[in-house]
Amino acid sequence: MKLLIAIVPNRLARRVRERLCADGHGYTELSGSGGLFREGNATLLIGLDDAQVEPVLAALRELCQPRQASINLPGADLRAYADPASGVETVEIGGLHAFVLGVEQMVHL
Image 1 (cartoon, one colour):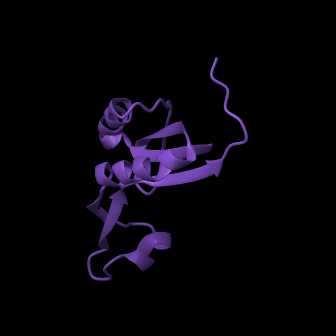
Image 2: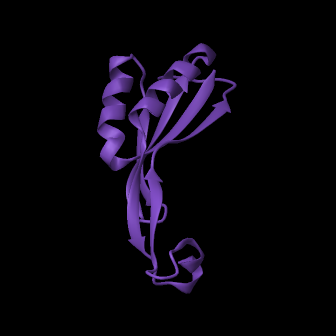
Image 3: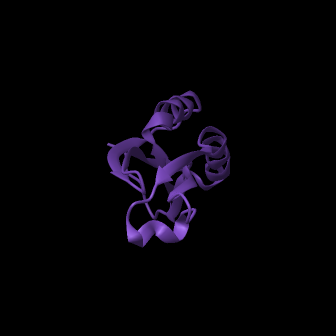
C-alpha cells in the first residue's frame, strides 16, 4: 500500500481530480500556496495499491506539464537567475511534485 502525495497547480487541479475519479481513485484535497510566484496549489492525498502507483503517476505527468513564465527580479537575492541587462528571467513553473510513501495500513470508515 502506498500514499501518493501530488502537489499540482490550481489551474490543473480540476483536470487531475476528474481523471482520478474517472479511473476510480479516491483522494483527499488540501489547498495551499507556495513557490516563486506564491500561486495556489492543490495537494492531493491518494491511497493506492502498489501496482496502481506507476499508472497514476503516468496520468499525472501527462496532465501536469510545466510552463514558462517571465519574471522581473528586483531583489538582489534573485539576481543570480536573471539576465544582467534586463533583470528579467524566463523560468519553468507549475508541473507536478509527487511523493510516494509506504503505508503500513489504510482504514476507510
